[in-house]
Image (cartoon, rainbow, N blue to C red; front, side, top):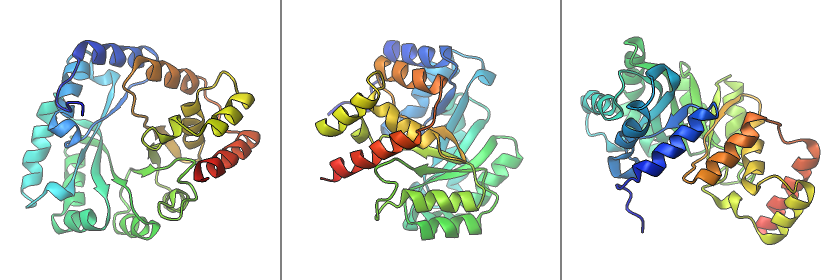
Length: 267
């Protein structure tokens, strides 16, 4: 088990520098990542090394950690200081499901975030979501002032009856809410597909990496303005930035191949 609180800053700095050099600048962290140490790592590798206007930072407030409405202020101030910034570009109510949404409503979390936006401490306010289309409909109806929503979307979960990526996507589109995609490779699962699926993809596009199919699927959807891909090696950064710099959405032929890949994975 790797130590989630220990960082190899020499490597991390190289990854950040390569990402920035290639014209990418969006960094997503959260209060709870790396056992509470991720925001501090972002400060050391990014914020202390680059001018503030050259990058965008997103972090998140998880309702499940709250015991009172008052705590939100001290959590937020702590995040500003750990990240070393005086405002966040993107700020999310984190991982809304039924119970987390109930907590957020109980403690007025959406109102708190809007207040911080009015103060200029947040540029764009939204939430991340892993739950049913019905709940998403309810949240967006209750809180129409959201600037964006972050959804789990990938070609495997698109028509999955329990995750229902497509239905959640359609609801966000109906509300005309811009979408950030998370889990485009389903936690790395779509980087390692069954051999017959990989062979099929390579025959069609010998030079394309397997993850590139998954990320391009998500990035080509109307209304999606950002795709988040967890990268922790130089190879992953070089690969992802290469096909996203010169982006082509999935075409009809490729979509047919992905449909077959889904069947192979289910098998």
